[in-house]
Length: 235
Image (tube, rainbow, N blue to C red; front, side):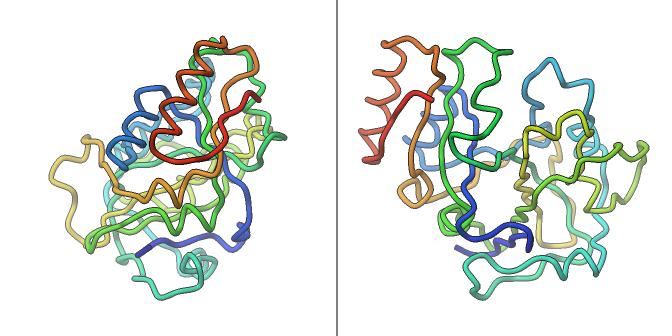
């Protein structure tokens, strides 16, 4: 663990869920890495027009880090960590969701059941598993549900990237934002960033949708338990 910061509203034992496609799950298990995308997909896709986070990520220059907001962050696990640069640049984002079996995203029916796999973890486990390098740091914070800010160019206030429209409140989303910790902008701001992690520290359980076929459940269980011995269950 190095360079991971957590918002004070998130307790260390707060359970988290991350939705992955089968290809992303394979990448996580086989290569022990996870993708942070500048165009982090809104899920479900039918809600994509309601939120422009991806566009703001790609269009943003350096981030403005309000001092009051920075004071709400703590190093993951209570250890030492690097403070973000005063004007860092965004490398990519991931969406996580609060809760375990009570999370509403587990029961959404707007995508085919067989395409949904959820990795269960916690704030502490995520902080311990991610391996940031000397040039990056990660911020983990819950989303505030309010009207999106007006589109803007140039520097972007950091809190704006942790906002979502009120209509998405039921999702209880948390975002993991990967930042370049130096003042220099990324050479290719549109490129995905792969971050190494300890998959055994991250994964506590894997869930598939209630309506998934028996074959799909067996496939996911086989893939997961080749790498980490955790339960694989239906929602």
